Length: 296
Image (cartoon, rainbow, N blue to C red):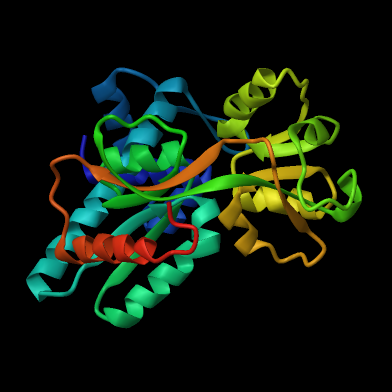
C-alpha cells in the first residue's frame, strides 16, 4: 500500500465511478483498476462493487476510505510544513472551532491575529467537539476551541470562558413579556437544543421534577438559530451564540432557574510540539479572554 494507491481509491469513492476518477486524475481506466486490484489483493478483501451508475463501498471499503482520507491529509500537511521550514516562512495554524464559537467570536480572533501577523496562514476546520478532538489526535489540527461537555483526558485543556445557557426564539412563542423564563415555562414550549446537551438539560428538568419534551435536537449552532428564527421552537444556547443572530425578530431571555454553564476551552495534544505561530496564537487567545466581557 502506498499514498498514490490511496489517492486513487479516495478519488474513485468521491467521484462515484472509476471512469469519473480516471478523468479527474488524467489517467486511463485500466491502470486505475489495476492499482485498486493490488490493494484488494494486499488486504484480502473487496473494497467496492461496481453498480449500474456508481460504485458501492463494502464495509472494508468504508473503513479504508475513513483511514485513507486522514493519511492523505497528514501527508499534505507534512509536505506543507516542510516547505514552510525550507522557505523560513511564518507558518500555518491549523485550528478547529465549533460552530457556536466560530460564528460569534472565532472569525474576529483570526482576522485580528492575521492583521498583526501577516505572514501567518490559517487552516480553519469547523466541526462538532468530538470530531475536532479526533482531528487533534490524528495530528490534523494543532489546536481546537471547543465547548463542554466532553471527555478528553489525553489533552491539555486551557479554559477560556464560562457562560450561561439562554433561550432564544420569536416573541410569539414565549408565554409572556417577562424578561426571563423559567424551566416550568420552557416545559410547555417546543425546545430545540444541541444533541450533546440533551442528557444534561434533561437531568436539570428531572431534578426540578418538571416534565420536558425536546422538539428537535441538532449538532450545529447555525441550524439551531435558523430553526428558532423560523418559529420552529425555543432554542437553548450558550449566551455568546446570540452574537451571531441575524434575525432581528428573535429575542433572548435568560433562564432564571437553570444553573448549567457552557465553558469554552482551548485544547491541544499533551506533550506535543507546537510551532511558534501556534504558541503565539494560544497566548493571544489567553490575553483576549482575560479582558473578554463576562469572563469567569
